[in-house]
Length: 360
Image (cartoon, rainbow, N blue to C red):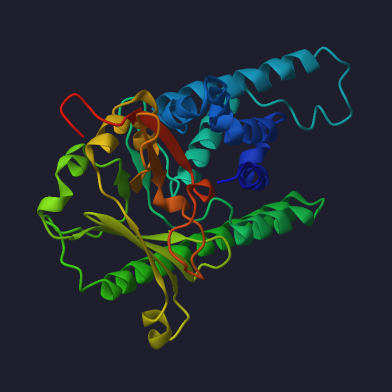
């Protein structure tokens, strides 16, 4: 999720009994709730380094404990420094939170950040650095306007009564659960209808199975089999959330040699859904693509991409340009006119020799 949502959620938690641990409780929750995104500093090493480490260790077990401890120490140290100043009139009524309380709140804040990232189609690496796979349940967009509205509105009502603030926080959290529940149910429906729409495509062996949690990247064997030696078959179907409505979903169909993308409106009539245009992108893995995939930039991108798409541009000056992209970030398809320029998608271009020692 975006950092504004993480911050508003932390402030909402601070209005519950968690915020009654003493001075510093709110600061610990807010700081810890945003701490995992400090991995943005890895972008200093370049785009490939950022993709290789993004939502990595800072979003795994070590991050939960390490960042939680760091946030608690920062708030505790600031509180100790502030304690040297003359006490205010309310300091006796509201003592400072203990270090143990700050640590527990900080660990909770980091954990909440990670758990809010996982329901997005972007996913997170829950077990890194021990396991670098991505996990996602595809319920929420990166920015959910409805979630922002609920959390923001609850904080606008400033009541002096602690009981009133706790009630407002409880209502906001219940509405938040309802938002997640609605999107979870809509996602289940979208997957079912997508499988019906593409039921005519024969499934690969083994057939794709429905799963609550999606895991990627796929094993290397998924890219190593020559695609031209067998007919096209269905590898996977995904329903990705859109920014505007919980009833509009992007359907990504991965076949053995191509991708199909269709926008699905759950509120549309069945006849309208059947006529929604479908865009198709070829995805043939030639020897040049395999060479590009073996480069450091290729490995970093494929470790990040959930639906990797490969295109080979015509050779020039003895080099071949291989474009690797992720079909999660393909442009909008409400008006489909075929593949769009790669500049509109998250992609990496890798130049390799046009001919390998073993031939083209």
